[in-house]
Length: 378
Image (cartoon, rainbow, N blue to C red):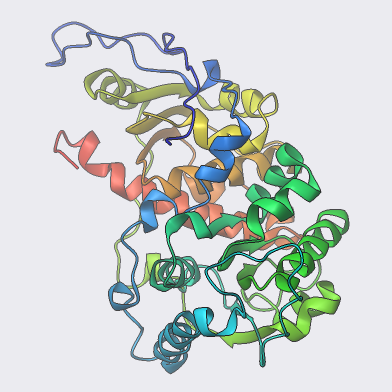
């Protein structure tokens, strides 16, 4: 059964249409993200717990290890072996336990892996590859970010989430958040219940505020914060630099408003928004809905990009950047370059990793949008 699809209006954008005689055929006005506030039913949240579109084709053999970083090739081997061993270690037959059956014996060895590495070393690619390689039907594997998992608990309730995920073979959690103690305790308790049911776990995480290191996620912080679950995880270190900048050209400079507007009117499925208005709109839409807000959008066009004014706004923008990156939606913008979005104070603070990840991802999407501005197909 396919997940419910929200009903989304398609209003005119904030910028006016391009002038006549520019070689475009405006036709229908582009969409505006600022007019979208979709309702996302709980069944869609469950059905969408799969690797995002960008990683639908991710496999271990499509991950290209950096020859200078042997830990990357080692990670592929370890995760492949882990996927092969999930069925053998579950302690359950046919995935169902009768109410009168004995609780399965605790499996030997770690039933979880924690991918420890900086942004851009391919952790999400490896996590998605693990999901695809695990020998189980899609409905018995779950993949989502920490935020998506907490949203699922909010939508279903704690006990129903346990019942929903408890017969799964594998739960993959990308970007486990360690900066909110309440949510960390909630999810750690949930994972403890799922481990008791025989669910294998895999995770990546963000560092705690003040524990930033040199662009690395900290396994010690993760294992300490999940407390009783630490024995279930084997830390797997993945060294390397951000692959999005490895041998790639610099992101294109921002365009002018006229170019951005022209592309928005020319390209079917494009959206067009004034950046400050979009930031204001994000405060009115729960981050769990940002993905649905991007449904059907083929390119995001933004005018007047400015530095974000405060941390709350910045964190919402990080979530939107993640959803756009997951969906491979190119972003064409005027105004400031994306590496000027966050202040120096923000880039030195506790959410530094999130902001650098957003810059990295938006830069990649800006590079993807360059052919649009030049009139070439993607």
